[in-house]
Image 1: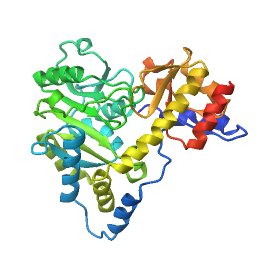
Image 2 (image 1 turned 120 degrees about the vertical axis):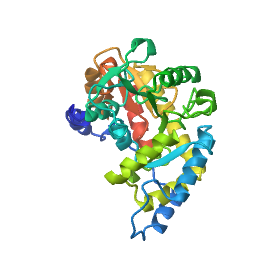
Image 3 (image 1 turned 90 degrees about the horizontal axis):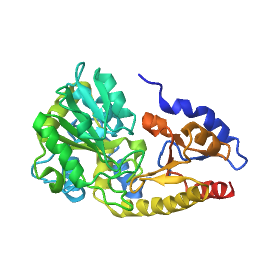
Image 4 (image 1 turned 180 degrees about the horizontal axis):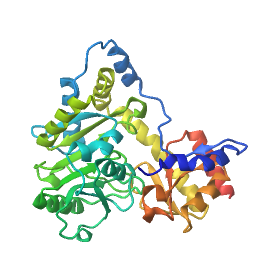
Length: 359
């Protein structure tokens, strides 16, 4: 396994914490706003749960997830399979193994991406290829799984429907599974992201397609570990079967909280509005401080560069009490960028903006 990336950031974090006005942590991207009251109430109401929950999810939760993917992803509720997961990260890390991918197989991941895609392939003993283009893969018959991520973490790039459709068609011809990480689907700013499950991309056929979603950012439920996967009902059944044996079960109170969260869009709109304001404040301040913002048309991050080694930028910002993530956490091609998260309070975001403008 590679070093856990966030451990490498500890020296910069200590430096940033020495700022007289305190640290502004824009690195990990952990939510800071309250869990909506209706979700807390649903969790509390379901807290008397002495029995084992269902690995496949309660009937109420499966109905809530199915309804949500029909509304948000343009999926067919009659044919799509759904499964709750213990957040999205555990599914990303274990999906290759759960699918039977192993030594001699290849997992394709984006050139710049969430590091757990690579970790999952390594856990399964598979080879990793970083590629953003299908032509770069050639006629390699070892490819078993392709990860796509739109909006991207960390770049905020949105893949157009035509691009997603080409990936789906290529994979179907070869019997390859496409896993689409869509955790930031609700956070389109200058572009509207499209789910791989949409009719425009999948054409109503979910064979070998899986879409991964999380309630961590849209509903501030990172602490609840609330996620789900939707897509090919046959693959979902296989995942349920293995997860039953492995005890990968979402707690019953969290399942009830997810039902409440997925049935309410008011709190999602309110949280989106908070992030929109913070995004504009940070974006303007970074540009004034000499940064260039690339992509970042959706998602929860700004992909920023001063055209220098990313760790030089991390250190420059840490001296001003601002902690960000170095781009090489997400692949060698990110080594001249940093990822700036929008997940800090309004007061801390304003403090970071003041320090950037002063710089």
